[in-house]
Amino acid sequence: MTTPSTAPSTGDVPVVTLDPTGADHMGEAARLRAAGPVVRVVLPGGLHAWALTTHALVGELVRHERVSKDWRDWTAVKTGELTDDNPIIGMIKVTNMVTANGAEHHRLRRPVTRTFTSRRVQALGPGIEATAAELLDALPAHADASGVVDLRAHLSVPLPMRVICELLGVPDDQQARLRHLVDTIFRTDTTPEQVTAVQEDIPRFLGELIALRTREPGDDLTSALVADPSGLSGEELAGTLWVLLTAGHETTIGLITNAVRALLTHPAQLAAVLDGTDDDWARVVEEVLRWDPPIGNFLARYPLEDLEFAGVTIPAGDAIMAPYTAVARDPEQHGPDAHLFDISREPRAKHLAFGDGPHVCLGPHLARLETRIALKALFARHPRLELAADPAGLPPVASLFTNSASSLPVRLG
Ligand code: HEM
Image (cartoon, rainbow, N blue to C red):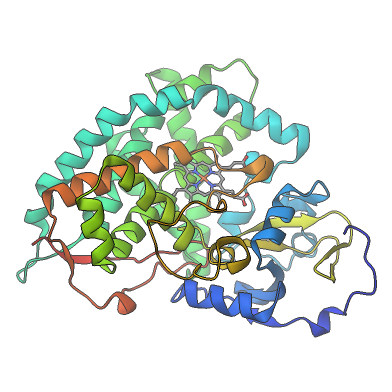
């Protein structure tokens, strides 16, 4: 596979322009799959990249030893084609475990796996339940004159936000600032001015957080990492905190939102869960991760030599995306009914919503726990919850990375 053979020239490969407004991730995913296993994609700023559209190929990509995660290996960075005010810059030029390879990756990931343990996450359970209850108490007060509440704004966003801020010792008065920074780096409809302002504020925000937790250590992960003798440099520590803060809440906001949307548009399955057991909530979470994953496209892999995938040669130094939405409904992996939301589906085969290989997500336990708690508590209080808008017309998160709705109007019932 790694030796190019008589591959077609890149001119034969279909080209799809990825929508920076994220208007229809799953529709775009279907178009990518229909275009073939290897597709050329156009990114903001007219940059070209590749997308592999089958579960098997993406699995191969994320485990491939000759594929780098380091943005310095992308030719578009070396030539200056990727400019610092491009909307995707905040997802590309980061220095932490996400963009490190091999032993360096292991060195940066290890302090987190050592401190962000399952035990620490399980211990968060009662606090997450209390926060969910508090947010649900306040929901009716957020209803507009016609009784409609934006569930994303008042549950999906604040729950993971408060959890990650508590976990990382971010003071309450910094949460809105953090949310703005993270929202902006994930969005791909941003102006050069917005991109530049946020890129300047991120190091300031992280510097202030590290200074605070060095001065006033607490029982949080930032304090634990600051005190860790494993020798992360200042920049590496900031980068590590940044990936935890960003990956640790934007994704879970999308998962909670997509889960509520899926249940409200599949009322028979919702009714079955309401009559079921706690295990059914776990099945819901898993099926939403498979069917409507909150991370749409993830980029940032660069072959270190010319590599062949499904008969197409991808040159060294190009960028290859892992389009997690495109592979979510791959019938080769999930069967001919892969396009259907079905919580009774036996997990015939694993999904890739959390990635795979050495860079597999570090937070599935937390994301699953938060979403189970949020769904169970929400539907226990509001079993007759209903959507107050056409599900096909919900405004998207304007992002080619995040697959979710930017508001979820509901009636509490
Ligand atoms: C629904 C929730 C989540 C989803 C769908 C998700 C998805 C992913 C995916 C797809 C990757 C791999 C990206 C790639 O390299 O291709 C990843 C990596 C990562 N995730 Fe998550 N994530 C979620 C929640 C979390 C949470 C709650 C945390 C931490 C608090 C977290 C921390 C990380 C970190 C640190 C990495 C980088 C790992 C590495 O490069 O070694 N994620 N996540």
